[in-house]
Image (cartoon, rainbow, N blue to C red; front, side):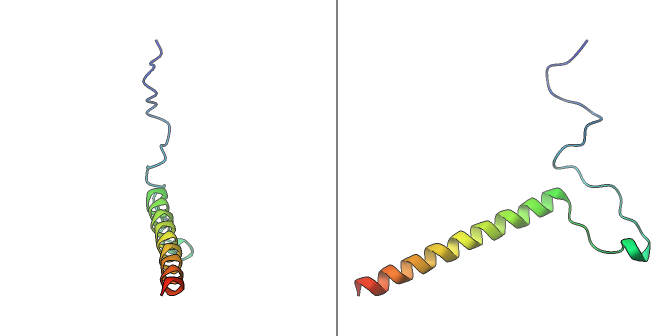
Length: 65
């Protein structure tokens, strides 16, 4: 009987860790997990918006003084 919960134990979810790293010298480069990569993208996006709004506020302040 099927389940309507959407839980599939064999399906890899977005937040799962990747397969174990290869320990050979060729595979020694650091790989980000999807969760870490999305976190980095989110933080960079927030930082970019903060820089844009800081520039806008600075220009507005200079124009009004």
